[in-house]
Length: 283
Image (tube, rainbow, N blue to C red; front, side):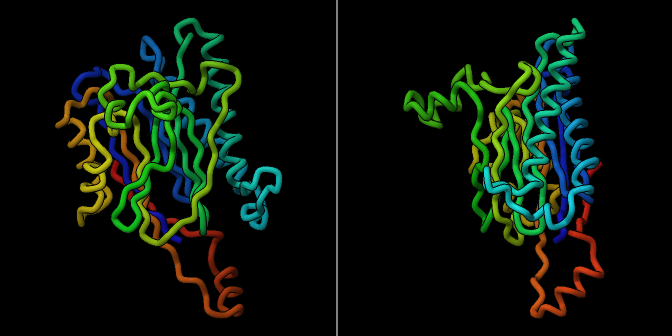
């Protein structure tokens, strides 16, 4: 499998600094996006700590996981071991951010949302906390894969708001979960099967608060490079007001055809790494 990547981030038209953070690792197939919060630029610290901790944790532990274990399902939770490693990385980030906020006065109360994706040959592991989102464009249709941890989402589920009404609520950015605000946090972890040509969109709420899903879908279906699409999404959010920091990370899958014979499979295993990555990003 090859993975094509691109990202773009902008302060927006209202904020004076950017509290979003992103990172990616082509060899691991790992992408992470975080949206920090807290006074005196502490949000920047929280999001940066989250991204760096998750990247470091996976880079240290995933290569040491035997190849057969990476594809092995934990029967207790019906998750692959690589997905559990991703969850542990997010929990480690929560602990480090919380300890920093407890020990440094200027960081008290800081926190961050996070959404992370780990690509394996046939599936994607997704972990998220807060209202940063992951979408998937498949067969030209954009679908949300994560569900916000927010007050509005709970009100929608209770029937007090429709999704459209929620878009215009002044309380749409109140999250019910975040990294670093407590010594414990529940991380939503899920797995999704991959298909060739899928485009995965990770974004901070500065994008989806400004653009409706149908607008993002229209942009992602344009016949342009991922770098151009990422920039178009950010530009469109700014054109609609740019009320918050806007961060976008795109990943497109290119799946290899399965070998026809056992001999071909054996040769492929011997001559290739566990999975291939094609890194293509915009610096």
